[in-house]
Image (cartoon, rainbow, N blue to C red):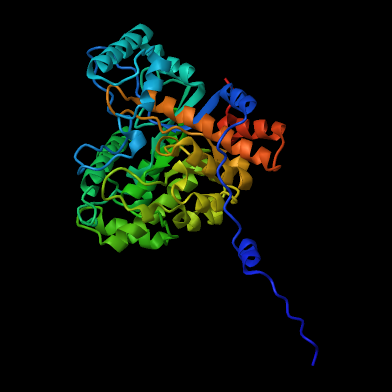
Length: 447
């Protein structure tokens, strides 16, 4: 028997080797890097800007497809609370606010100043906002565009979800009380798509529905300037879009198109088939497919249903490899799952809304992980949207891009300090994240 040599390794060394100490987030950013990042004109992959509304005009009600009016009360994260003092910085930068508080009297001054700028700028107001934010182009995820939201400063991202829900939704799971509000929004938009497609009622067969409604809608939206279509499906169901059989989808559609409540499993099979059909058509038309993946509004939102790993089956479909997918909001809190999916040739992610939920240091940790793993797939986004007269899409856009520039500088400084990248590479990565990756993905020319 061979002699055995006993090795005595201290327990502390074993623990260090097996469980290395977590790397602390970078606490300060390189000043030169901060200055250079501030100069980059950004491409915003996802936002909900408002069109210009003149005095006496109808308020803008097309900034999103799913209304939140009627939802049960839900809590807001601290940074999105309209009382967040960070918004004072936005008011100063955008509207010359010269106070240090948010008193009622001073906020009234602010609203008057905003209204004055809007009147003076008119249809040019949305472009003026982008100029103040340092954003070259904003992708507007809206039902339709409108006054001031014109190319090339604004690019349209339309909604595809209504095309996936042609049948009655009354039998939808009752575990989510918010669904009745959201399904009503989808039904309203589907009726609009039918009218725009010159179809009086749902076609009798699935083949006719696909041709006369689905494909017709996508082709029309492409002609009207859309660069992508967006799914908010996680508000209504899980993102596990399986590979459903066409014959089964035809059967289910024919069975319920004239009425009745499809069983949950049946409706899911039809939705799964329609999702993949829409994605294939989008690829044919060179439209990217955006998919909401993050904790959503409402107190009954199912976070587990928007884990981006649920999309793996669709992303691995060989028939969808000509379609570019963007995981909008980056799948937070499952951001490392998102990083793993970006290894696929046609999968990208933006970090919109994380820019409003997370403070810069926390956001920098997400960005560093992504930049170390898949830097050519990372897209900047704000998710700028309107809350109140004093905290509108303008203020949220300012907060988002300010947080991004800080977080990106922190992430890149840490990578430089650890010897992972050079300063030149850091600046290259910053430009990729803020604009170059988007220009390449959407085949856009710089303004």
